[in-house]
Every structure is written in structure tokens, then in C-alpha cells.
Image (cartoon, rainbow, N blue to C red):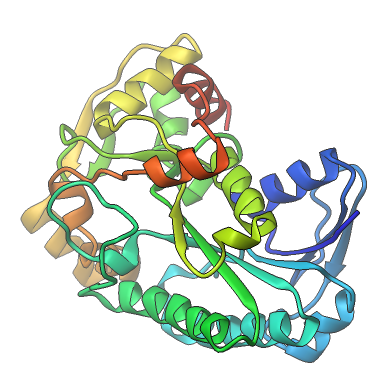
Length: 305
């Protein structure tokens, strides 16, 4: 039995902890509040993960440290992420633990064609450059022999427990009531959506496979669909009809960004929603034997959120 320290109890952290606990592993979830996830056989600890001394003290014998953190204030990433990322990297090195990182696709920036792991990290926005630097630092430590690191990257989250962390689940409460909703960018473009359960499965598999370390892996995800279609499919999964979907684009987003810091941040990422945004997960499927959660199950889990 291995010891696993999961930092963060959001959609991915909770799924990682549940998956590990179900196989009888020793699991501790560390969050600032120490809130109980309700998972059986999982310890919960309150700790400031930006303090490596405190974090290492949570489980000095941890075999794997999972970075499933996600600072809640999206507008303060430049302030909150650097000390947290530095602490997680330092802690993994001190513990001698595998460092398994939940990444995203921001580091690639705008791309033409499907995204593969061979693409360079060439982000043009500050959030993408921040996430790219986090992986670059971990990879440098891995190559220097200071620790073993691996990162998995998925597209926009769907599935159970995503809530405000997902573009689709964010509008579902209104849509379930039959109300019109607004979604960023074009709603007719093919876009990959990733189930958080598949993120967890890939992260755990990559952490356990030492020959898979030192690189990025893409989470096995279903074929791309449009924003309008995924919302329609999620509503149908709970017996609800489609709703009117408005597109937030161009001048509307520009004006909204004057008043909303969140929209101002999202505006820099509009390239993700204005043209096809497709993830190629062939490598991880072949390496780990993981297939994405069947689409009907994804839709049911998303709609039940």
C-alpha cells in the first residue's frame, strides 16, 4: 500500500482521492479549510499548502504528491499560484515523492489543428505563460534528478461535481429551468470536453508508471462537440428540452471586461472558443489503456451537478 497526499478537494482532487481510496490506498486530502469531502477511508487535513514545512508535516512518508489545487480567485492567479507551485515542488522534492500535476491546455496558446503532447508551450496570455512555467520548473527538477514529475492536461471540465469550474455546468441551473443562457464565443465550433473522472484516472495511472514520468500526457476525452450540443445533450440526459443559447462575443465581451475582472481575464482566452479546440489523447489511451467515460454517462454526471 502506497501513501498519497492530494492537495486540493475540487472536482479533480475529490475524484483522485475517491479512486485511490476505493483501491485500498492510504489517502490524505490537504486543503486550506480541511473540509471533509465525505469520502470513506480518506483523512482530511487543514494546511496552508504554500508553506512547504507545513505541507511536508502532513504526511512525511507520502509516496506521491498530487497537485490538484486551483486557486478559487481566477483574477489573482499571478499572485496566488507562484508561491503555491513553488511550495508543492519543494515539498515533493523533500518528501522524495512522485509529483503528479493536474495541468490544463493554457500553455499551448492558440494552435492550428488538434493539440498533441509534442506541441511547444507557446502561450500568449499571462495565465498560459504562468502554467507553462510551472511545468517547466517541475520538468527541470525532474531532469536534474531532484524528483520524478509528470503532468496530465485535459480540456474544459464536465462530469460530476464540476459546478462553477465548468463552462457548461455553470449555465446548467438556469438551463434546467428552461431559461436562455449565454456562453462564451461561438457555440457551433468543435470543442473537446474532458470528464473529471478521466482526469483522475489518468493522473493516478501516470503517477504510478515511472516510465511515464518526465513528460505531459493528455487525458483521454470524447470526440469534440459544440458548446450548444454538449448543453443540449446534458439537458436531454435529465429529460429537459434544449434552451436558447446566446453567444458572448466581440464588442459584448469587450464592454463587459470594463466592469468585470473575471470577463477581462477570460477575454484573453477567447481563442479557445472562436474556432475548433480539439485535444488528441491517443498517446495516453495507448500507454495507460484508458478510454474516456462514455458520453451518455458524462452527460448524466454533468447534468446532475
